[in-house]
Length: 255
Image 1 (cartoon, rainbow, N blue to C red):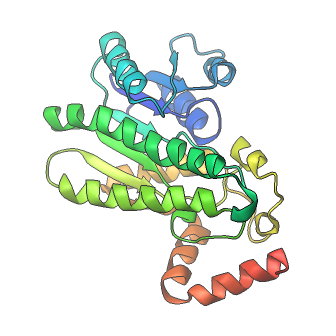
Image 2 (cartoon, rainbow, N blue to C red):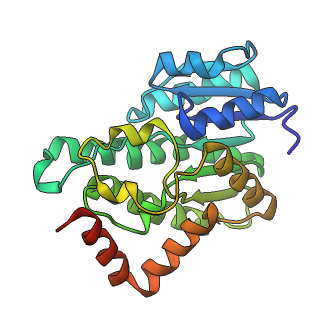
């Protein structure tokens, strides 16, 4: 993609996939707005790229999200592409987690995705162009022990994005839902209950590979994006042989 003369809004840009996307498009000459609640992480993302615009935002606050979108368009011009990927991933058996923690995961992962989508999409639709890339996860299809709160937030994201896509077909805006497997990002460090399933299967995918998969999907105008063979296999196993996946999960965790 020619990033020049395009404005990219990267939500969740302080690390991981968001950082990889923000740096890639800034280095390619694009106008990049990197936003996140983590100010220190944003500074690291923008290091060596003085043209990158950074702003802190709490995606759980719709008023803040709308204000940031207003600010980005005022400073950088109309937004062409949105990477919507702010997330948290505290793990634990559901009965060991507090209701507040479980609902906080939903508030950030699902609520934040909704806030960004509804703050930006009407502008894209009015202009009849652009891309809204919402990040779910393979965990939005395949539930796992220890990941109940995270999976619930990603299942909700998958459903919201699918309906959003069908409600706005043929209006000039490409909406995509990205469902990667495990990715080598700091999000993995939040899995403090030590889910053993994270040590099985292939090595975590690099953020750059996910960005590559997203770009191929945009070129193909694809809605579902399952980066890598492991994600595609997980999707089909969940659809046709869910008991097999549960046996793998129980064997890994030992109960």
